[in-house]
Amino acid sequence: MTIKNAKTYYERMESSLGDKIKIVDNVKSGNILEVGFGSGSLLKVLDELGNVVYGIDSSEESVRRAEELGIDNVFLGEANDIINIFEGQMFDTIIFCSMIHEVFSYKRNELSDKPLYLANLEASRHVGDLLNQAYTLLKDDGKIIIRDGVKVPIYKENNLTTFTLDNEELFMLDDYMEFWANGANGYNLTQMLNNKTMVTCGLNDAMEFLYTYTWGKDSMNHERQERYGFLSLDSYKLLLEAIGFEDVNGISYLQSGYVENLKHVNFLDLTEVSSVLPDSNMVLVGRK
Image 1 (cartoon, rainbow, N blue to C red):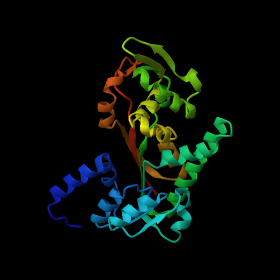
Image 2: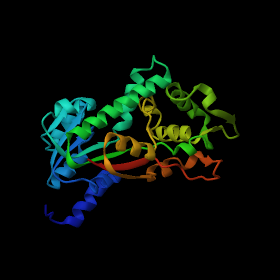
Image 3: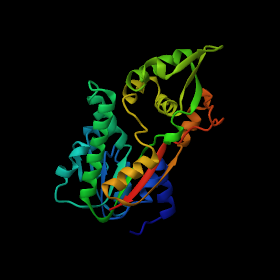
Image 4: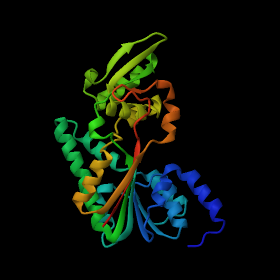
């Protein structure tokens, strides 16, 4: 596809998509399915680039917004039903953008009456089933692209870290702990001067809470339900390879917005003597 004023077009695209631009760079052109398309902005860009785009989302509002953008092939449904909704169709690229961690988290929450290890196992299987469905719906040589949160590497999970919160913000930590931490034992609190509290915990727990905390107190009740770093980058790679994908490669990175929004919490990794926040996101690509 030839694009008039290509420089301006791509500048606008990068501005509207943010780091989702990394997805566009890896797409195999043709028939493209996005699972959990949200605002529809990525589908719109891929459509303008000459692809035949399809989308599925569990939100009626998302479907409405996508249709308003002029995207016709969007469907209301659950991610783990794509094998039935798109029966008989094959795709050149299937995209999951900030979707896999939601599939895991909400399935895990449904199983909250079970022991934690069983709930996590069943939720992980739910993710595996979804990715197997994607493999089936891809054409030979087709691509899967996953952009999502990323867990810190296993060998760094328990690095000792500290950060500070204003005392009036501690309720946000309490709310978060109800869902994901092992009670108060997961976080040690030390009262400080100037109405602040120092929080001490493992690196992965710090990452999960702080990146949720940036959404603000009004969003905490919703955002706390999601485990953003479902797997580490290496574990994601192993999962895709076990399903059958080849040439699996990816990168992890820290979104710049987190640096700006968390500069006041005085984050410190005591194990590595570093104030650098851990990577928040990754993009992973595999080929069938």
